[in-house]
Image 1 (spheres, rainbow, N blue to C red):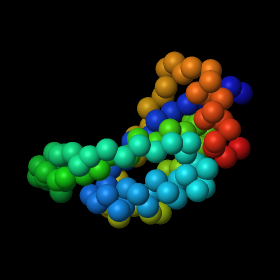
Image 2: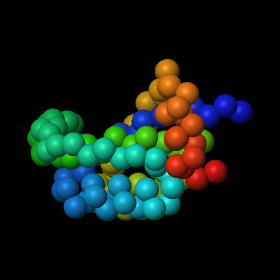
Image 3: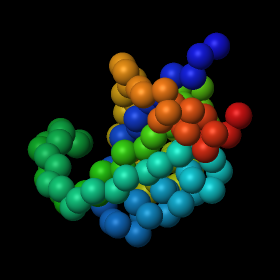
Image 4: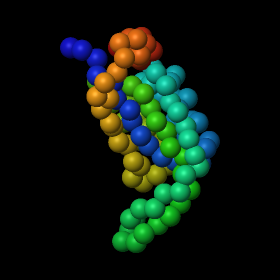
Length: 107
Protein backbone atom coordinates (compact mmCIF):
# COMPACT_ATOMS: atom_id res chain seq x y z
CA UNK A 1 0.00 0.00 0.00
CA UNK A 2 1.55 3.33 -1.01
CA UNK A 3 2.13 5.98 1.62
CA UNK A 4 -0.45 8.78 1.72
CA UNK A 5 0.74 12.09 3.15
CA UNK A 6 -1.66 14.27 5.13
CA UNK A 7 -1.51 17.52 7.05
CA UNK A 8 -3.42 17.62 10.31
CA UNK A 9 -4.48 20.98 11.70
CA UNK A 10 -5.29 21.77 15.30
CA UNK A 11 -5.27 24.94 17.41
CA UNK A 12 -4.43 25.80 21.00
CA UNK A 13 -5.00 28.84 23.19
CA UNK A 14 -1.43 28.99 24.49
CA UNK A 15 1.96 28.61 22.81
CA UNK A 16 3.16 26.28 25.59
CA UNK A 17 0.24 23.92 24.82
CA UNK A 18 1.17 23.93 21.13
CA UNK A 19 4.81 23.25 21.99
CA UNK A 20 3.86 20.34 24.27
CA UNK A 21 1.63 18.72 21.64
CA UNK A 22 4.29 19.18 18.94
CA UNK A 23 7.01 17.67 21.12
CA UNK A 24 4.87 14.66 22.07
CA UNK A 25 3.88 13.93 18.46
CA UNK A 26 7.48 14.17 17.30
CA UNK A 27 8.80 12.02 20.16
CA UNK A 28 6.21 9.33 19.40
CA UNK A 29 7.12 9.51 15.68
CA UNK A 30 3.51 10.31 14.84
CA UNK A 31 4.67 13.43 12.97
CA UNK A 32 7.65 14.14 10.77
CA UNK A 33 7.25 17.90 11.17
CA UNK A 34 5.03 20.25 13.17
CA UNK A 35 4.80 23.91 12.24
CA UNK A 36 3.39 26.33 14.80
CA UNK A 37 2.09 29.71 13.68
CA UNK A 38 0.30 32.54 15.38
CA UNK A 39 -1.14 33.94 17.32
CA UNK A 40 -4.17 34.20 15.04
CA UNK A 41 -7.68 35.45 15.75
CA UNK A 42 -10.41 32.79 15.56
CA UNK A 43 -14.16 33.38 15.49
CA UNK A 44 -16.48 30.41 15.94
CA UNK A 45 -19.79 29.19 17.29
CA UNK A 46 -19.65 27.77 20.83
CA UNK A 47 -22.57 27.07 23.18
CA UNK A 48 -25.04 28.97 21.01
CA UNK A 49 -23.05 32.15 20.51
CA UNK A 50 -20.17 33.53 18.50
CA UNK A 51 -16.86 33.53 20.37
CA UNK A 52 -13.54 35.11 19.44
CA UNK A 53 -10.15 34.07 20.79
CA UNK A 54 -6.44 34.15 20.10
CA UNK A 55 -4.99 30.81 19.10
CA UNK A 56 -1.89 29.08 17.77
CA UNK A 57 -2.16 26.80 14.72
CA UNK A 58 -0.30 23.50 14.52
CA UNK A 59 0.20 22.08 11.02
CA UNK A 60 1.27 18.47 11.45
CA UNK A 61 2.89 16.50 8.60
CA UNK A 62 2.26 12.76 8.83
CA UNK A 63 1.01 9.63 7.08
CA UNK A 64 -2.69 8.89 6.74
CA UNK A 65 -2.38 5.47 8.40
CA UNK A 66 -1.10 7.18 11.57
CA UNK A 67 -4.15 9.44 11.91
CA UNK A 68 -6.02 7.33 14.52
CA UNK A 69 -2.97 7.26 16.82
CA UNK A 70 -2.21 10.93 16.19
CA UNK A 71 -5.81 11.89 16.94
CA UNK A 72 -5.73 9.93 20.22
CA UNK A 73 -2.45 11.58 21.22
CA UNK A 74 -3.81 15.08 20.53
CA UNK A 75 -7.03 14.37 22.45
CA UNK A 76 -5.03 13.07 25.43
CA UNK A 77 -2.96 16.26 25.60
CA UNK A 78 -5.37 18.95 24.42
CA UNK A 79 -7.07 21.17 27.00
CA UNK A 80 -10.07 22.05 24.77
CA UNK A 81 -13.35 20.21 25.34
CA UNK A 82 -13.73 19.79 21.56
CA UNK A 83 -10.47 20.57 19.74
CA UNK A 84 -10.27 21.00 16.00
CA UNK A 85 -8.48 18.00 14.51
CA UNK A 86 -8.76 18.29 10.76
CA UNK A 87 -6.86 16.08 8.30
CA UNK A 88 -6.19 17.34 4.78
CA UNK A 89 -4.98 14.94 2.08
CA UNK A 90 -1.89 15.94 0.13
CA UNK A 91 -2.91 15.65 -3.53
CA UNK A 92 0.64 15.80 -4.86
CA UNK A 93 3.87 15.19 -2.95
CA UNK A 94 7.42 15.14 -4.28
CA UNK A 95 9.00 11.67 -4.09
CA UNK A 96 11.88 12.90 -1.92
CA UNK A 97 9.58 14.51 0.64
CA UNK A 98 7.36 11.44 0.77
CA UNK A 99 10.39 9.22 1.37
CA UNK A 100 11.58 11.55 4.15
CA UNK A 101 8.08 11.47 5.69
CA UNK A 102 8.09 7.66 5.70
CA UNK A 103 11.52 7.46 7.34
CA UNK A 104 10.67 10.01 10.06
CA UNK A 105 7.33 8.55 11.16
CA UNK A 106 6.53 5.32 12.97
CA UNK A 107 5.84 2.18 10.97
